[in-house]
Length: 376
Image (cartoon, rainbow, N blue to C red; front, top):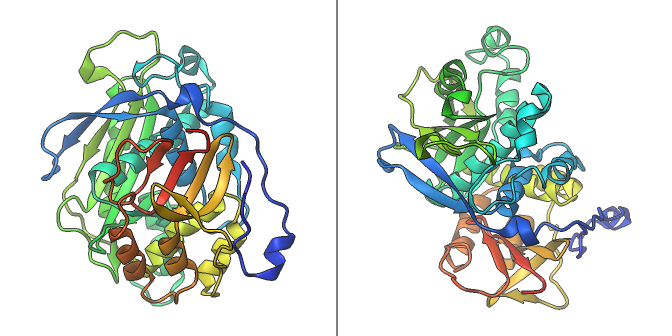
């Protein structure tokens, strides 16, 4: 990957060498595969369906989700993508992993399936569950725990465990600026490979937490995703094939009230993106409220009729952000950023998913990120 523009106005950013990586994330991994989605207790999704995606898009989403918003220049997500680009079977049809994955050492197998499952959860949240921004919950929970006099000031360590095991992975934001909590689990094997104890734990993780400062969506505001991946040579019924079980669990006790705003979620979600493309320092400045961070490009770049800030090049693919979104995010005040960004997204056909058959378009996300080929 190579950061192809230097849009940042902070002088010492320009002294940092770009993260350069010549690696192909297109070609055979761009062929479409399918997996089953099996919802339970979801009022707006009452029937199973088949979701189409490519290993490229899945790996890209997994990389975004495993990138931290708060650790500048943490590039381990790319190590995962490089290591496992060939771990998804090349067969067309159903999404499968290579047969060798079943014999991997248990820790390697667990890390691979958990991270790939995060990609599945992200794609479903973006495409089917009306989510725009996905941020890690852990930083907000950490701040809440450290607040003296909070309801769980003294009992939090015992309740959460030393590493906060009983909290969900993500806090998301919808176009209506409502929060959605999401937890992902993954395993290699049939649906039962994600054990009942893990599924129950995922529900508890969601039921333990409630955001304070942004309303939780009334329906499908808490979602668990249990994704399982079958091996390429396995023969199984459709109900046992690769898929994601999505559950909207009953409300819990909301023991942990986490202070967070729509602006916080938006900022942290884009900080994950910046870290993913080697610009974690800029993400840090973004979270700290340093503005402006973005220069007006001397030569505007356009794709599908929309102006873009070109962030990175990954082999023959390019990653861009809709310019209005980037400007509203990186040059405007911290307060009100969620609304500003959402207004820009509403104006973008790419972000709304209303652009079809555009040569070179690979993936357009509702947050304004666009992945496209430099050689359509």
